[in-house]
Length: 289
Image (tube, rainbow, N blue to C red; front, side, top):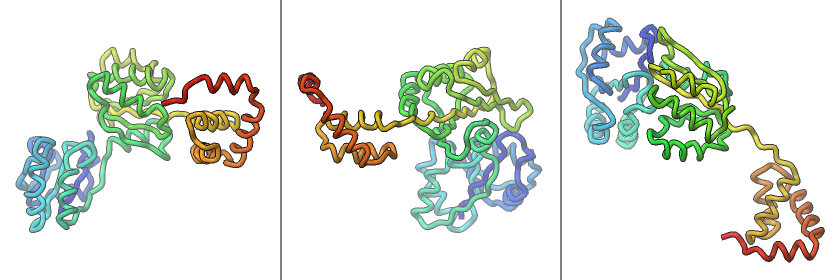
């Protein structure tokens, strides 16, 4: 089988007994960086020296089939440099190939930078989304953040310390100066630090220079208060675009939770109260494309 094994994200004491026992017995280990894994084995006082095979972003697709075949005859332990394989680390394509090939995949749970940062952030944890790394280029980053403007769930990102200040400035620009953010740095390590506040308020701190592994936790958007009046306005907008009133009322009811009947009747009353001059003015504008 294939064994996905979580490794410490900073503090070696977070290595589980099960991880150490598995590494002591392993014959083959697929590692994101074989040098890092060799150091880990020594640091954990693992006496076993398994065969190490490099499995990284640049070779995973071509290696996957070979490793799946290997796992048919022996247990294959998969390690990333820190945390859980497949989570913004190599392993996803290997697991896909294993599932397709009927090879069992199991897991040794352990440290996760995503969940650890979420837990200490002080932001809602009941619903969240992991968005990986923000894009390097500002234009792409702004576009990505623009797609998340109305995201209600707490958002978790990885970020480079060199781009942290620019990313915080872009978060403030797109999501709002006061959008709450927790910058989690060097989690579980000696210099662990969590800075919390509005996105704009953290920019100058980040510009002074930040080092280490960074996880950004960003609050989701506040719920929009939808009244019957605003719902009716949305219904009438859909009607002006060519939808039937009944269909428009149903669509807005589904989107807002308002009563379809109330929306329909209020929209009818609103249309009935429109004066001929207002109707003529409305008709003078071409329909939206």
